[in-house]
Length: 315
Ligand SMILES: Cc1cc2nc3c(=O)[nH]c(=O)nc-3n(C[C@H](O)[C@H](O)[C@H](O)COP(=O)(O)OP(=O)(O)OC[C@H]3O[C@@H](n4cnc5c(N)ncnc54)[C@H](O)[C@@H]3O)c2cc1C
Image (cartoon, rainbow, N blue to C red; front, side, top):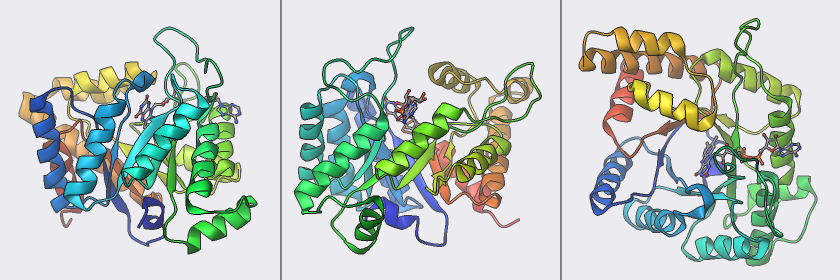
């Protein structure tokens, strides 16, 4: 079963993002985290892919470990950065050879302080990578080129195909303006292009307010985007990590939440408060119709397990 099929089930999915470890100790830690999560709630894992493809081999090694050891589907993240079209085709084929059937197709980030440029005959946008994976899938599994509707029907009836997730971006408020959550027009255009190229579902960037997710949901549906929009959720327990993530992803910091966490009477109180705030966020997005949760683990099981215990506990 590929991950896209999970989103046809009526219950919310629970999935976890892992990253390729840099050290032998990190490797032990991620393997242990994965084993614990696989024994619990995991519907699937996803494995990140470092900027410029620098973690390519370590990412693939972790994907292969998870496929071999956990029996949980695994999404391999893949970016367009630093590779020609034919190199990307080889990477996709290699992952298919390794048993991967689930991809998260991304453009990748521009270099720090720089603008994005594909270079050579490389791909410029995630929608181009979605199309390339569909091309390789068609060659590999004998799918004839077909119209988007025929492709959709084929994907829903065949069992050996590939599932493709893409990134989506929740609304953000603009400092000094009304406080309303707004989704960028170019992000909606990009998401629509990814859907049209053959994406199956989208996973969102981190956000801190239910309204940010609802704004994306509303704007996407109005733009004709029907993809399941899976909220990406960070356990909000560590102010430094929240700040780093906001800087890395160029999103506004949740000032009120950070102040609350920092005013808590000690690390355990701050941690418990962060879990409660994240649980409120999770309940809110599920009530708004989110098809599941994608939890950013940072290769540690404690925070996501505690969060799920809190969310799933009877009221
Ligand atoms: C869930 C998730 C996981 C991620 N995992 C990784 C990872 O493992 N490794 C990594 O390096 N990065 C990762 N990223 C970060 C991602 O690579 C960056 O956010 C990157 O800057 C944009 O990627 P994208 O796939 O959204 O790009 P695209 O969809 O290509 O969009 C990028 C920009 O191009 C423009 N654009 C694209 N298509 C169109 C169009 N058709 N018309 C007009 N404008 C268009 C828009 O301005 C858009 O903002 C992840 C992000 C998310 C949300």
